[in-house]
Length: 79
Image (cartoon, rainbow, N blue to C red; front, side, top):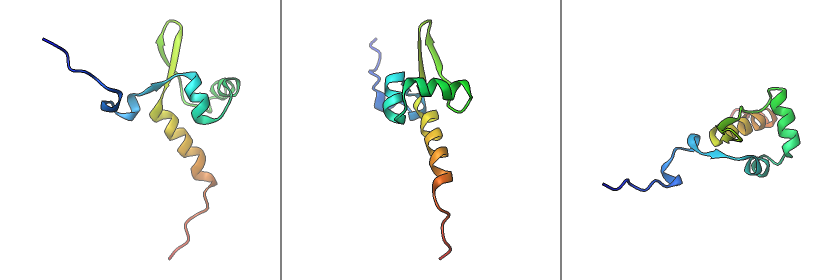
């Protein structure tokens, strides 16, 4: 019996794991700065993928970005 093919588009966003190079591109920070933010617990936790590989859940990074944007947005004016 064949297993059904699984495509990345079939996965929920939260289950997509991206590696450091993509994180740097997405966030716009250097790897060094991301490591600094991790050490100071200001960045989402990495996920251990194997003995020598790590990644980050895309959903965690998107939430982190949203949390950084929200305080800088002006409050909505009443209509």
